[in-house]
Image 1 (cartoon, one colour):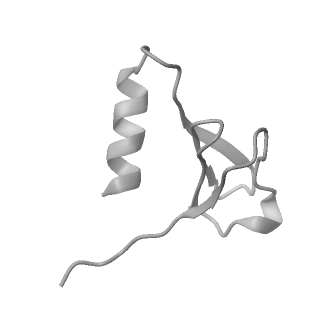
Image 2 (cartoon, rainbow, N blue to C red):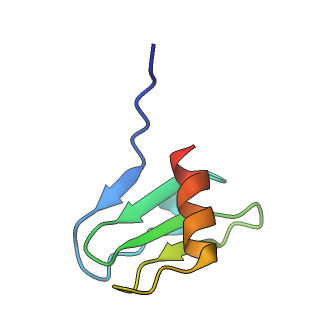
Image 3 (cartoon, rainbow, N blue to C red):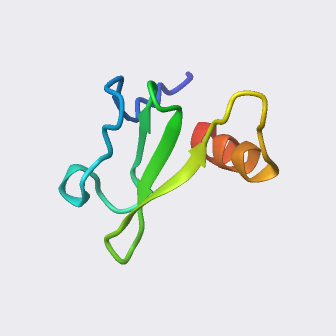
Amino acid sequence: MAQVIKPKRSETTNSVPQTSDLQTHEIAMNVADQRIYTKKADGTVVILASHVPGALTTDDLVAFSIALG
């Protein structure tokens, strides 16, 4: 049976998850800003991918592949 993965998400422009919002290595996304975030082991929140229309990079594709399994 397929598993449904539901990352934390926001559709509010410029909404960035705080360190208290995420567990280590948990994924969050902001649909309005088209960004994917995670919390590193050192406790910082980083952007894994940021979509610029018409400019997907190899790093973006790798991040999306990891995020989507």
